[in-house]
Image 1: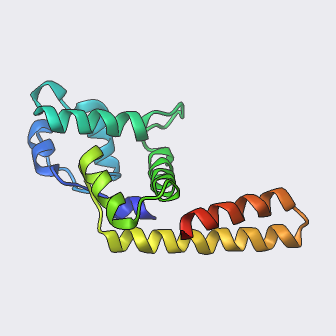
Image 2 (image 1 turned 45 degrees about the horizontal axis):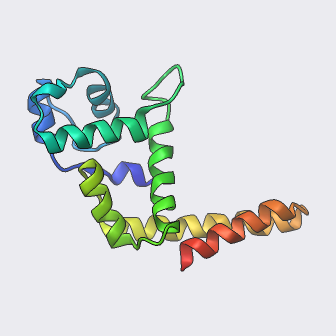
Amino acid sequence: MIATKARFRHARRLERLVGYRLPDQAFHGATLEAVSSRLDYEHLDHTLHDQMIRFIHSFLKCRCKDTPMCGCPERKFGREILELRENGLDHRQIAGYLLEEYGIDLYPADLLSYLEDSVHVLEAIRDISCLKNRANLAASAAEHISLLER
């Protein structure tokens, strides 16, 4: 999954504020736990503070009992990437957006691979939907494919 490749650019600064070693992976359990409960936001510079607030608002808000370890943050992150692509951004622009908006580093090649894999999954959904006479689902998958491939 693409979330395992997402890294916080300023992980060491976050680590110093938390007071213990954190992995640089943005969606690692220890990082999610620190960001959601242990981080002293008043000691962050303005840019990093805003990025962390946007990260929490975009990916950590859910009503699951096990939040943030429920899997919702990773799914929301993947959905965000797909939506950015469907809105016309290419893989390089998506990488730039994630860095600016959330402080997340992600290689454009990893994004491109994720987008290609997503198209293959959607193609399988479309084909199976056609076989099962689920025309609405097949049409929806075909629409998403065309948006991702443009």
